[in-house]
Amino acid sequence: MALFESYERRIDQINAELKKHGISSIEEAKKVCDDAGVDAYNITKSIQPICFENACWAYTVGAAIAIKDGVKTAAEAAEKIGLGLQSFCIPGSVADDRKVGIGHGNLGAMLLREETKCFAFLAGHESFAAAEGAIGLARSANKARKEDLRVILNGLGKDAAQIISRINGFTYVQTKFDYYTGKLEIVKETAYSKGERANVRCYGADDVREGVAIMHHEGVDVSITGNSTNPTRFQHPVAGTYKKECIEQGKKYFSVASGGGTGRTLHPDNMAAGPASYGMTDTMGRMHSDAQFAGSSSVPAHVEMMGLIGMGNNPMVGATVAVAVAVEEAAKAGKF
Image 1 (cartoon, rainbow, N blue to C red):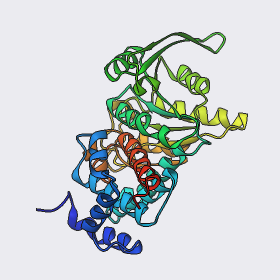
Image 2: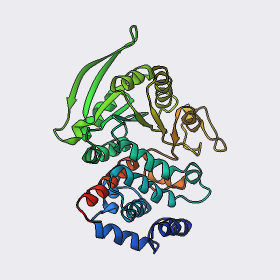
Image 3: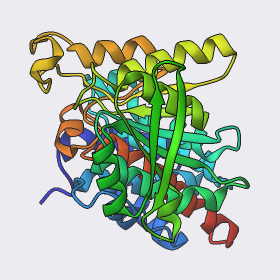
Image 4: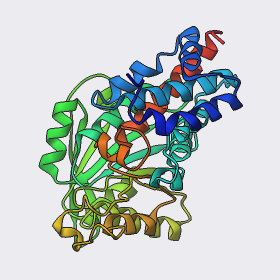
């Protein structure tokens, strides 16, 4: 039985990439990780349990490349992990064309560098996939940083934000936006746990204006938009408007659009963009994003369809950072 999904369509590129780093096979890559005590396979699985086998192996390959190249910091490790992810992209696919693997590695590196203070999962609704990504980040990023990375969820709907906070142990931040003055008021904050999860702040907005105000309030430096629910109604307009206002203020803001790429997963509110078109979400992502990923922010099968690996884009952000931090810790312990 094949080691992972679409093995035959991937293995040639994987072996070619491994060879550049002096690794002869994917089995040897696993041994490189095992010898260094980096369990990339299970770290990946723990972040999104429904991910595909190829996701676990992609992170194993990425970690092996980082170890073999002797990187010492988590940020450098993340960039190397990007090479591993890219090698899993099926030639000619959307993910291959957009170099999504490299993009994920670079995003992970950005979140591990001190210049990035606040990262937002910008969701159409408060989603479990955003939560999975946020938990992965909250758990690991700060081990490799001097100043803690602030992680927020910003989505449509206050009730949804409270529910997601309560289920996952985040801090729910209830806000009230004054449409007359344009001011955002924090009504109350409720922490639903005492641990690292409580450091994730979860906001629910009533509309785009409040969503943008939340971004300014937290001083978001980097965000990733979901692309399936409410994309034309919330997250793409929020990212685009915030981008414009940051440019006016001379503030750096790096916007990642989770994907789209088929046009077929769109809902009726997306202007009936047909399967032959890129679809409205994809187009809107192009208007504000510094990097565009491919496929769903949450559904492994959809990201797999785009030719990357079977793991949602949001959990992938958490996995990249978590595996990169594990590599740094192994380096510090003198394991390689």
